[in-house]
Amino acid sequence: MPTVRYGEPLNVLVVAKGHPYLRDPFMAIFDQMPGIAGSLVEQPAAQRLMNTKAMEGYDALVLYDIPGINFAGGPEFVEPDAEFKQGLLALLDHGKGIVALHHAIAGWPAWPEYAELLGGRFLYQPGELRGRQLPDSGYHHDVPHTVTVVDRAHPVVAGLPDSFPLTDEIYLSEVFEDSVQPLLRSSATFTRDNFYSAARAISGKMFSNEGWLHEDGPNLIGWTKRARNSPLVYLQPGDGPATYDDPNYRQLIENAIRWVASPEALAWAKQG
Image (cartoon, rainbow, N blue to C red; front, side, top):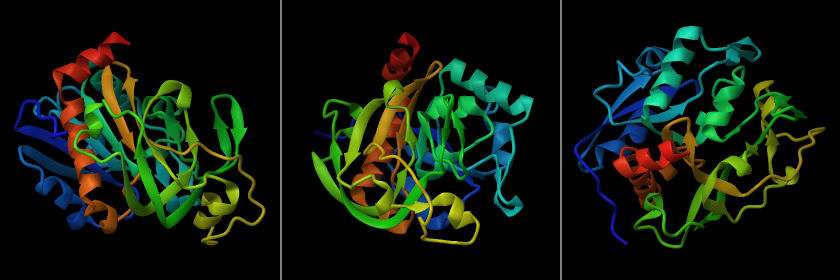
């Protein structure tokens, strides 16, 4: 199945920072996409662009950031200000497509609606989510696993094989399976013994799950959903250069951008 192409050229605002990343290898993903121009703006400056007026010249928004957490503060969770909330929600009501990648699922932990918009949350500390008290989430770097496409007909997976290998960081975190449409699943085993505690990591105890209890999690690592009136795609892979360079991962991101920027995706989102 060939890549699905809608209107181009497409201008994409790429938002990053809040989590360490290698800027040039990451942006090389977008440099190699024909007909797509990615413009990188890092947090916190990017917050002032995430509104309908500033995004007029952009066809889609890519999130690769963790806003709302001050890791130096222990961590300290900061709620977004009213201007940002109003601007982002207006942007989503307008119908701007979003592709969220990897650690973006941890963003704005003090703002419950943000998790609902993305379809889940990675918790750096134990906390309440959807009325439940939950432990912090888990992580494991460099895990070899097989990614399987579960919705063969969706444009986001066009041109991909039915399954492909990937070595990347995976998360044992909260996924709102009742609110998303699955695209990708992982062959990894999402149980407590295969992950490390995020809270222990940020306290200086990396690669530890001592005393950490977590329920088994879903193996869902890619989905699409409606975020108000906007089509949104979340792809859990994306930790570093080995994944950035993977041709299937690049195809996924390109397809996702083209789809969320398309009239078809916008019409689908507004039907909800």
